[in-house]
Image (cartoon, rainbow over all chains, first blue to last red; front, side, top):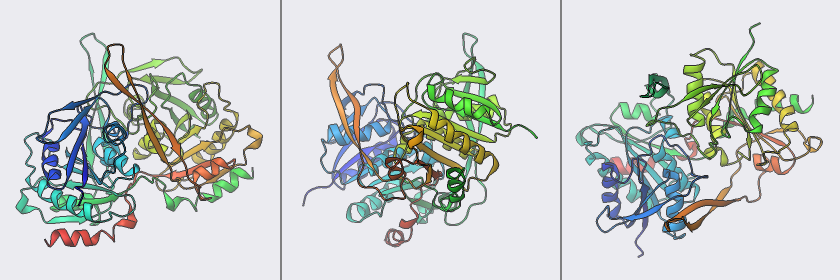
Length: 260
Length: 260
């Protein structure tokens, strides 16, 4: 049987411990190719480089693994991987991460890690994004690796459902305290932004984004509840942003405008 | 009665004709404040600036309108507008655009224009993103302005439904040939990427993203069908990426992993 082809990417860059952990797990399941950003790209969302050229360099980052660093965004990495590095070979799975920090709830929208996974799904590739709720480069990835192994194994053998994209978040807990995975929906929360206002060395004012994640009490079917209660959250996700509930109520707007 | 407060932004930058057209329309409906990028930001998706400071400068770009240019992404513009420029005043509506080029179908995911509108909705502000299917800076905005006027008027007086975000695309047609608006869902399509490969003046290889929008036959309830048939498409949109249909089928994965 042909070995599965697994594309690994992330948004923290090639030298983040999280991608090393993910490559180690992916190697147990098939041929691994890595295309990752050459610098940290957190918060890049689904950005693509339209007005700048992209650089792609082969690097010796992981034992026995073909790896390239790319000057672009995480989404650029996936596009270059598919169309240049792998020259349209069939990719069996794309895994993105393991991100350092949460991509649960609305963080999926801002996340380079999850946008890379979504780009793979837009290209028709099954994909999973992994995030550990620990920003530290000293983070313990053992539980993440244990569950990533099981999820990769499952994803290679099974249909992931329409959308083909899983958003997996792992709580910062010792492996023995993790209760298992939980299939959930995206929880509702918000960022309370603040900007640090200061002056640069030339006396020019600048603003630097900071903020606080605001979470109200969560229903039991959300990723935020799962993570707060010792579970790994798994949210099946897709690229359709339509708010279907609003289509019928908005018919009145259609009639009103078209008949005026 | 208090005049409504309307925030205007875009992703093409402060000097694109599309934002000028939108400011002209918005001024008929209330107090307008503009915060827009100081350079073109197409394809920036939901990127935010985490690792760089942001600059904000008051500019004299539109008659009788307070306007600021910002060094960041479209999403940064909305965050700075809400929390610095408007210091948490209640914003009644955010309008983004008028974009030069389509944001229908999956383009919403890559779009700076629509990500700015979505950021406003995440901040609890009703919002509408407008895009005209004409990339030219000589584009004719008369039909766009006519319908933007009606939609802004409606949005200020009515609930837009959960999600509070409309993705409005206007076909490139003379005003007399536009049949009206149509409430739709996001159509399915894909980009067939290609990379132009070349050498820079130093002999180093680079890749430049290009591609072709691939659209199969569309159901009549999609934005792509509407645009191809002379309608302005209006897609109610939201930030929940959960693929609800897949939650039940994935319970077997939950059982399998948790019991292994």
